[in-house]
Image (tube, rainbow, N blue to C red; front, side):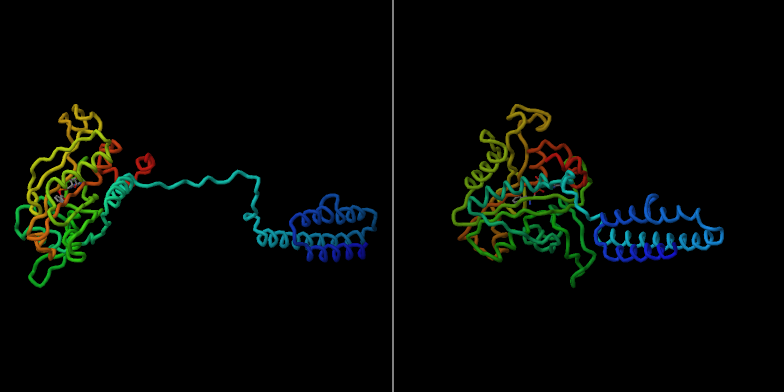
Amino acid sequence: MKNKLQRIREDFLKQLAEIKDPNFLHELEIKYLSRKGELSELMGGLKDLSVDLKKEVGELANSVKKELQEKFNEASKALNNFSGKNNVVDVTLPGTKLERGHLNPITLVQNELEDIFTSLGFMILDGPELESDYYNFTALNVAPNHPARDMQDTFYVDLKNKDGQYDLLMRTQTSPVQVRAMQKYGAPLKALIPGRCFRNEATDARHEHTFYQVEGMLIGKNINFANLKSFLEIVGQKLFGPSTKLRMRPKFFPFVEPGNNGEYTCFLCQGKGCRVCKNTGWLEIVGAGLIHPDVLRAGGIDPEIYSGLAFGFGLNRLAMLKYNINDVRLFNSGDLKFLEQF
Ligand code: FA5
């Protein structure tokens, strides 16, 4: 019986060493270690032995059983780790659905504007969000201490220049890229400049501290107000439909002369008057005008030879109108319930 025990032990260990598949491991367990396996069967014969032999062989059988069970457990663990039980791919299981990303409503409107203007031969330009006081204000005809600076308070970097002035700020508008573009490319020039802007605002449903604008500029010979009107009309009709009308009303911006606010017939009520347009029938969307001669000069362009037009859309406001969004603060909220609707 001791010999038989020894043989079972050796056979088991030999077969265990060769196993590479968890299924065979299970077969081995049934053959040797289960209730009807060879070891149990052999131990069942102990009752026929003498008391002394029963004690001796019984102890040996128990220690062999313990050893084989431990070896089996070790091998089973190693094999599971190796073959990566967790990595086993059951190709019959349904797959995990991947969430699809999508574009932000601001990006959607920006893309539409870029399409319109690149088809008209405009290039798309970028500019720094951390801007100098010079490009954001002074070069745009807003001298230090000019009252128009109050309209666009912003976040300043806590560093003074050699004259003791705070010189670096988060840009309040995309207009500073006008002068940068003139300096880099000269005239003639056609550019569309989307970008993020910042203002120190008491925020409400229409005002954010961080928002987007799209600047457009065209410089050439004999550029006039009629050109500006036709560009703004094209944008309105493409974004809000072919029956959209444009109304231009005078507005002061120090960097254009003359300056105006562009308003479109309300996309919701078609000019009849409603909640969105506050019953006026018109929506104020864009600041625009003919580029001031001083600004052309700051860009190194001779205003006696060239003239230009410029306009600045509030991109958040365009998206709000197009998608009927009632609070500008939703764009920065990071709320997926809001973002997933577009
Ligand atoms: C400007 O910023 C001028 N640079 C626009 C311009 C460009 C005029 C070229 C002439 C020539 P204004 O401050 O009005 O103008 O801002 C333009 C648009 O930006 C506004 O009509 C509005 O849609 C958007 N905007 C301004 N401030 C905020 C704000 N705090 N939150 C959200 N949108 C804003």
